[in-house]
Length: 163
Image (cartoon, rainbow, N blue to C red; front, side, top):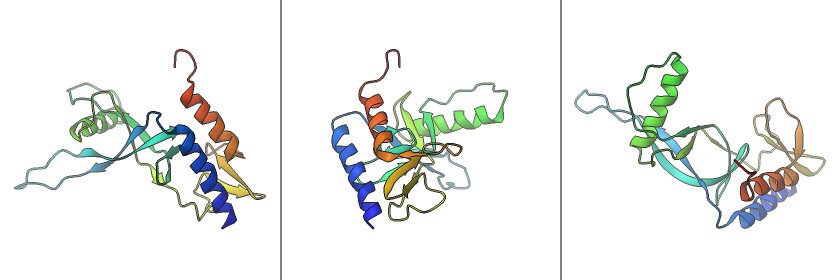
């Protein structure tokens, strides 16, 4: 339990540093039921807001692993060469139908992390030798969580020129 407490402490300090800085929207895809047999278009509805710190989405209450990001966009007929482009356009239109502003980024398919289960192989967070670590990519190794948060918060608060 001391391991989870160390992670909680690091995340709480990160929240304190980020207070007053912009957050990004988290949404959830809703497939709406048919009305009189007529299908209704799916939409992405707002769930909460979070600070985007690389692979982590830090909310006021918890921490989530990122999934996909789409920009809300009004639906329009377009010719796409790839099915994946059609699917992304459909998600962007679903976000717009859900009430997000044109061009607003929306995180979907995120996963809430259980900080009490830091040994799970599916979580990017782990405690190694008593120190909280994060694996920032599936192929990457673990790095200390404190250094990772410091770097990501610094990038968020002081973005490079042209970013």
